[in-house]
Length: 293
Image 1 (cartoon, one colour):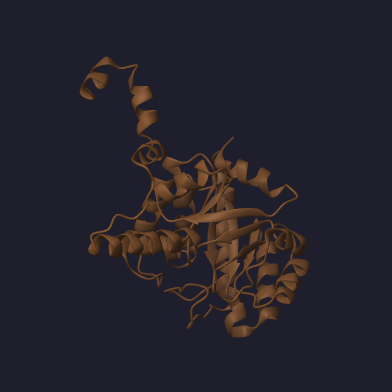
Image 2: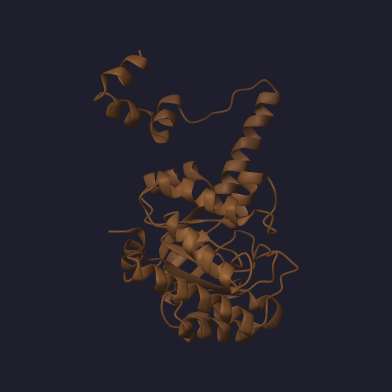
């Protein structure tokens, strides 16, 4: 079963999948090790981890695809990649979809923000016209169909940020059109209340994704409530990044004071990274085994 097929199967289940978001191969590996069934490469977190810069369109297409490829090489659960605005016009969107699919992503998110895009819960967002937004999704769907003709597959996650500047009604209208154009998953970013979240899910067909940013504009509801509202996926884009950064800052401050904070034992660290699996596999090869002595 390829990853796109695996993701489609997950979306048929009557549940809201908790989806911690990764930012590199190691964070994705930890997500899989803890039994989560899918993950998303957060653009916010990936930009911070890879180039140490904010999610303001600074990472290039090539850098993002390379990051996605490293992640899919490390895990066997479906990865949704953040394709931002598609990195150009409709033809660029097609190339972006093809590149993410080739990198092993089960799905790619394409959004309707102006380029360079911004994090969905920060000020200054603006969206393109309806026609340009629809062209992006139309191009993404066209590339998905071309991939299927060649034996491949990828799901299109269509995102609108229109709520911020134009209101919820415009966001719902855009997402409805995205569905009619063939998008597989719909994502209305930053509804500001549970009532707005219910309006989104009751108005739109098919699987919907909620984006839960701790301290962001969308209410951080329990998973049971998100399922009742009608979401199929609950993404948590910054939970791991924020936790990792807090732990590293705490450790650094302790080291500065010549203290030694509690941390993961070296044995577990090695196991989770994959040393034990590597050594076990290498026993088949005498020359490789001798090099470890």
